[in-house]
Length: 192
Image: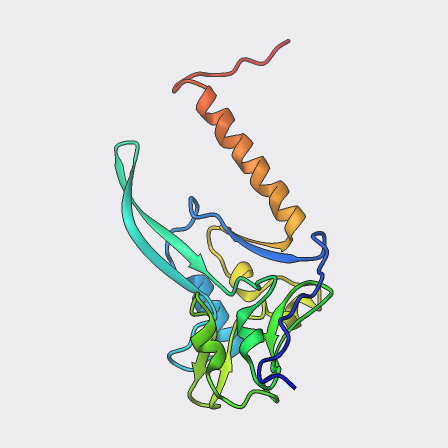
């Protein structure tokens, strides 16, 4: 038997893969997503399942605006964290692509923490085990959205099947193109 487990290559259909999208144009960096996540998951000081990362300010029009990026687990197609786990504690659900840690199998070796290029798995010093975002799997199974999404004050987080999120992105992009086509101060007259 090989020392390294066979890479996961679960075939999750595009229509079933769940995705969490962050609309940075609406984000004000209030950190309510992080707060709701920590409260829901009863996380101690230190580890965070999701993070708001402050980027350099950018100029929009004639105003300076801060730019924020939301970093949750990306629930990779072929998660390297799962591939390096010696006890197979990190699993990927076939029905929706959620990658999660079975804490009863975790031995606290920190291989997943070292392997993830995004720094997603975190160390829980209270349990001595690795932890990570699982899209609030228990809530998803009840038909609810993750805590970070429901707690977002500006509704910049969207969650659902990848096709639905793609449709939302196309709609938002079309709306921004329409806004750019109308000259400032232009009033569209209704046809009668």
